[in-house]
Image (cartoon, rainbow, N blue to C red):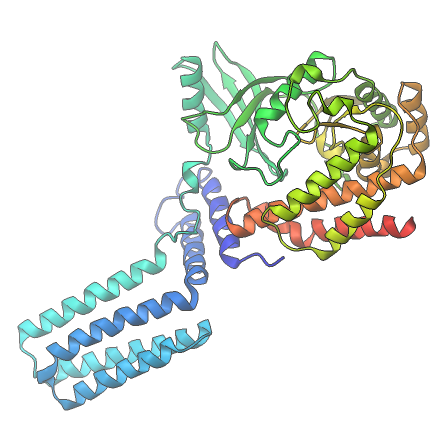
Length: 496
């Protein structure tokens, strides 16, 4: 996947804008932050404009030269000859197809025009009024040309600040929501990580609202992956329902789909759950509790033996009345095919390998007996909060759906398996009411875990490449995450 350079530079500029609030002199000419911001803008505009922009500049200068031919008619035949040669030189420049070539020809034309004006100044054949008029024409053209190099381009993302949330905007929003002018946001910290949502930690001191909170915000009005609960408005009722059933889900307070004072994506506000993350989707980064094996087994057994989540109503394609009536095999086949078709229909970066692996998946869907279970869909260290040895919260329910409980087991095997005693975990899981799973079924869902992640990563990275998302971290997906996901999926298929 080739991500256009202007997308990288645009996102870099947005990241610099986020940092500016941390530096007192960030808006002062000559400051380091201002210098970086200006440099990125110049680089981005050069990349975005390219050869076409310089051809436009050549056209503009050609029009200026046409005016000068009329005004410098009394300056002598040599001057007129040089003007005609200069216009011919611009024709040569416009014919260039590579940026370095047209830039070199452009600079040479500017140098020739400068030398010409120096000779006109020395010649003394122009009246003072004519010299003044010539100077005005050249000044108007040249200053406009130079300013354009530093202007915000249409694809630059310089209007991203309108949708960026900072402490002041959040405070104004909360004061308005709770009609409490004295309410204060006392800390504000956007979190790194996460590719589908923006996460912000903040503290509030007020009468109507006080304490530590989390905002989970859609990155755009249209998510890269539809279905499941990828929109916060769909994730919110699932969080509420799971917590009401005693599951360690975060306490979701409200979802806002209007947020007139905070333009951008919809968001959920939750109370901050205690604990810390111990790793990423690829595995553990810190020491995990010795009790993790038992904790995971009990948590999944609790989830998979719950009664159908009918109280959320007709929420998604699988969390609906009809979804709970399907067989496990039908749930799996429908879920895989839905994402496959979504991938093909959505704006994506072609991946023949990924499509080939989808073919294997659709040909090998397991059809285990039994009703579907409630699935989290994204179990892993990136979504577990631990407080000491206790699993304090399971985060991010955007992949929640009804299906074969072996799907969650396969995903856990991929994300957590290396850090736990798998045989002991399964023994505890079965003792808690879960069902055993055979090796072929587990392998299928391990492949699916990698393929689903590769699909989401492809769609997210394509959103960034095309300009529908501005988060710079999406640029790493095509060179790091996607190749690893696809290689791991194919290795498991080869084992089969």
